[in-house]
Image 1 (cartoon, rainbow, N blue to C red):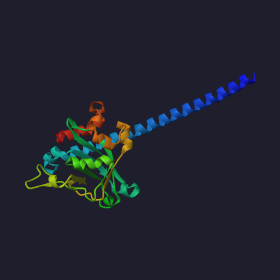
Image 2: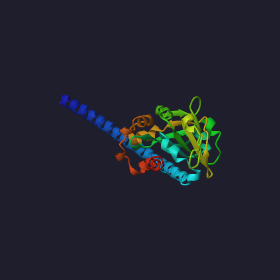
Image 3: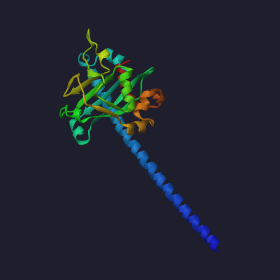
Length: 243
């Protein structure tokens, strides 16, 4: 009898422990799912805003990015609504997305934050939209480490605007990355010395299960047919102007 009671007691303890572990696992999974949905919601918002900025800027050809540069670019990044206050409060002025050219078009968008204290000191109080053209594989490769600093030996310059680049311009040969900005309706080439791009891998992993560098290095690993329409909006906007 004592043996049976001891056995039942042990069985009850094991059962309670198993139920407790199962409950904890379910709660952890639910919390992870909620966080994933939150990150995906934020990512979709960034894609919508970046797509909107690119379309608005390209709507006026005489004051837009020359098509010939877009068609030569290996990668395009858009960072809408960058604000100085963000740098002061958290060192992060804004968010954006980057897509790279592939043999079949453009990759799924990957998500980055833009920061840098010295860069933040340069911009005004108004929101500023930034567009970056990565003109060669070397420039794009700098993003694969999930962090890109606009300083030192990195080759970048303010990009020209208008229908054409203009005769005698060697920007694409001299600069790996061309920068543009729009603030208070004024669109022009820009310099962003001191800026830092850092992969927002909480969003990248929520969508792709990979970090930014992995997606950019192997864009074919993300099947565009399986990417939702709202997420493809940025790639579609880029394809419209950079065939």
